[in-house]
Image (tube, rainbow, N blue to C red; front, top):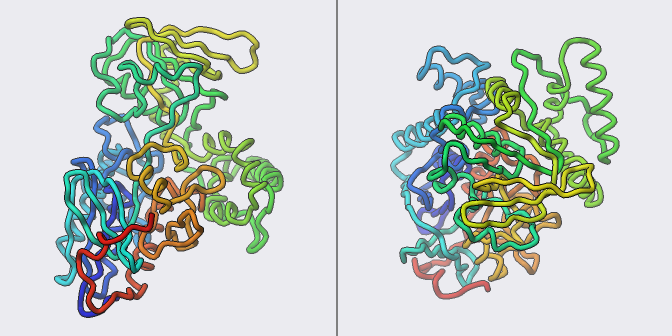
Length: 481
């Protein structure tokens, strides 16, 4: 709602899945004049890191039947994918680049059918800073090339940010050309000899992607993949049944220990009945995962992060059977070597890199000799330390503060950003992976599509208290810092 017939302006920073689908939901749901501005620093839009890949071996981690981007149409993606390729079934794990094209299709379709009272604008550029107006009712976004955008509401849809550097004795190696912090950067694989040994730090989903990309490129050298526990993501088994949520309403386990016991008993029961396996047992908890996380106190959350997080991740975030088979082949052939260890030091001598590691369960350090080190540890969400320019600005100006566990910023229940004084913003909201601290489960499509829809509902139904003479430049006259 707006006053004086002025359209509400919502600026969304980030054009990946979360940002694009928030824009889509705003335009689909709005009943009043609305201006949506989608700001993305990269040329690509509607794809982000996950779906912007050009590697055909990078498959979705969920079958087509469960990948609709629209919460009110569960078959939307499957029907679209089958139109594109009649061989697609509900159980198909579709290439991720095709899913990116699907999100782009939804945006274009929405634009072609939007009401005449809705305006959409797309901007490409890096956001340097955000200033809040003196009256606290709007904000001004400053882009790196000089443009300024005034908006009534600003949505941070920053997606998955670059991983943090692993702690080593002397971090000067991280300034060298043979270290790649962002595995998705263009510098990750070019100018690399086909026989060069490589170290991938991390053994999760990002490592799987890079290993497959190396395989497709014809790489022949040894690929070392290292993490503290050496756990690999588990593999989906297709064609299995769905189980109901195993907990009675209002009787969720209030401790990590209680949850662990109940999961083990559930797995034992379903496997004894031959109706399902542990995968379906884990999946049955998903509808209440966010509720569980919010039920637990800080002690239980800390216990889960310390003792259960790595186990949960490899069981919860599984890979397609085809991907699992390719990784297994690479391991059996000796090309991909999985190591459970900590990195102690990395030193470079010309083109040679010496990596000192401490293998798990051993008291003696060992050495790996490689030609390149690629960080595959996954997105960093600790806003206390992230060196992302916009996050740094929000942190330094006091507009943002970290949550207790370094999983993201502190936010309210309706995802408004909370500043260092503990005050909820009436302008800046958050959507996507940075909600992990509030929701825990906040990186997969079923949760993200719901967030986009719910945030759109909140924004377009919240009355805006504009002054009668609000000028477009009002936000530039003051800052909340």
